[in-house]
Length: 112
Length: 158
Image (cartoon, rainbow over all chains, first blue to last red; front, side, top):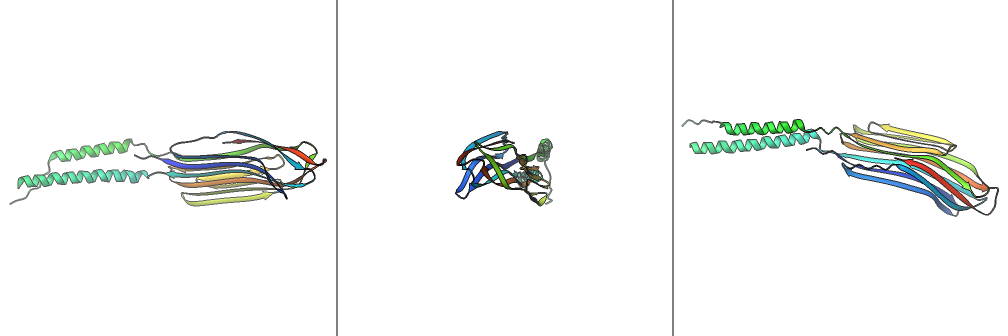
């Protein structure tokens, strides 16, 4: 009757970049995205072992930027339980009232 | 002519039976008591930068950590934190249904970012974001010409 569900999205980012006057050098980069909907669940657990070799010029000034980021976005989706129960209950009551009225009318006609 | 209204017992019994069934269904329906939970964690355990010759000299460093959370669960809530430092920084933000934290220490080259969301009864939306950034200037000294630089990092994620 009531199905709780969700949409979720998560994103993990790690990046190391060297930059100089001649441009940026992407040294290390890894990204993990997870998305799920309904009642499904996903899990992404592990180790990132990253390595890379780049050639730089001795004596030149370089910049380094590194980012570690974790992002989570979740939305719960549910028809509120009291509302759905009220809808169901009022529907049944309405149906019962219609049937009762029909039978009462039929009985009245037969007596006349 | 006298009009009489009578109720047959059979429709009443049908109605009572139907009502009993409805009540039975309602009583046995499990309540939606679970929560929508999502957690993301990224931990930098080591970061090494090694030149094939000479050494790396760092001239300046700046660490920035920020955290932001927003939720519409128990009303609308939001929180944010932002900090920066020369060698380390950390930030933490939290509301009822979400929290986020980040930190980095350039002396040990370790840090983490974590964002958690928990929506009770699956009702509402929540967003959490955490990030730690490092900015450094460096040069390779003690050698000349092109140098191969090996960069390695180990991270655990969940």
